[in-house]
Length: 259
Ligand SMILES: Cc1cc2nc3c(=O)[nH]c(=O)nc-3n(C[C@H](O)[C@H](O)[C@H](O)COP(=O)(O)O)c2cc1C
Image (cartoon, rainbow, N blue to C red; front, side, top):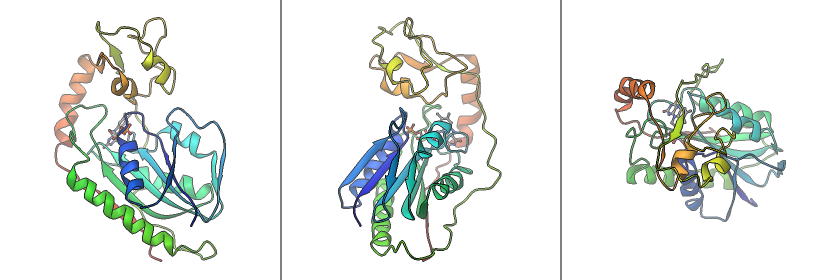
């Protein structure tokens, strides 16, 4: 095996953290590609390499921006590990969709996992995740993936990896609330530059375009003044309704190809 590539979309940085934990536990050098702001070049990845794809779950699906970037990454029977990170509600069809995308692009899905991290929209849900228990499971998963890849043979026909999920995938939903800045915004412009869909006004960064915003919460995570947040009656009502339903602790799930 040659290189290990970590390819991830991670606006609010939890997926990145879990991907780096996986990389660290693979015991080899890794190349990182953060595709949150897009992927400039196309990538062709050799079948002696390994790619770990990571996404946050959005409404039970793969975020659309990640789908667009993944289409530029091609394998040639290249082994892949699929990772989704979700905010303790459910990951529904996200892993299955990620598997389908990777297979269409020439990868062989050999292992997959669903890990839990703090909910980037509903603060307080899954706060403190991934915790020590999660980290041990992440480490165990990474080590098992490495063992599997040491014996990977690109000329062999492997059975399809079985993961949870259904086709047709869940219909995407969009809430009617977006983050905004408050009076502590000093117009530094970080959120404007770092918004993956250019939804924040350069002349008044407190204002977010409701039609463009994908609610990824990157602006909230990166704001040095902690000025940005989801606010307002609708948001508070949705949070009051849904957060209690997401309170029961979910545990990581892993899937391996039966060689
Ligand atoms: C638009 C959006 C939709 C989400 N949908 C779900 C969901 O369906 N199920 C869930 O458990 N968490 C959901 N989450 C929470 C994220 O999956 C979770 O917070 C993840 O850790 C965010 O990853 P990131 O920090 O790398 O951006 C959603 C978050 C966002 C921003």
